[in-house]
Length: 233
Picture 1 (cartoon, helix red, strand yellow):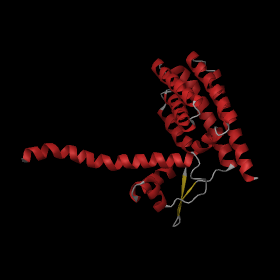
Picture 2: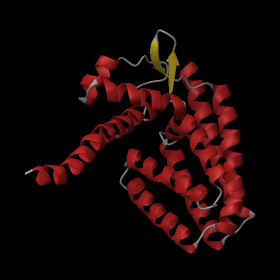
Picture 3: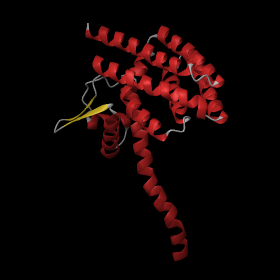
Picture 4: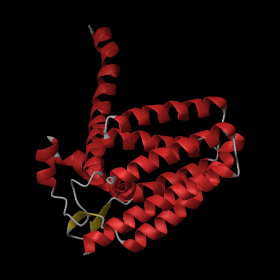
């Protein structure tokens, strides 16, 4: 009997530990989507009770998710006043997109040298998956796939410091990148740009790919700045 209990306890213990973490990750993903997709608008106060009801969870995973989103720049923690969705400003968009464009350009140059054939095959597969979402007008899954492509390209450089810096910065502009695709015309152009990016990567064109990636980010920035201007009017 004791032997049976001992043999079961480790697995039960692992499940007990794993379940709360799994719940936090699920809440984090759902809350991030609400912010990125604009359902929780910039400047909105995050009411824990309301979020718990909406996400059907307890306060602990919501609080942990909010803290993590603050580290990504999507949430701003206010002393003694809770948390709000971080506002998007013209200055922030300009600064972040310029820096992100430089990082992606560098990643493109390095990827042409260091990416394995398997890396490129994975990025190509993600590209075709993204095209399918675009054809069906599925913006949210398209965007998730799009972000995977950009991240995998950076990771394929083999430069861990570059990848970590990129992840941290991209979290701050994820909402702005999503906003750029709310224009169907811009969304279609973004898909065309991605095809050129993939073609340059496959050819390992270390001169063209960085320029395409920088231009891709620059075009997104212009659309976001235009949208922010319209909101201010």
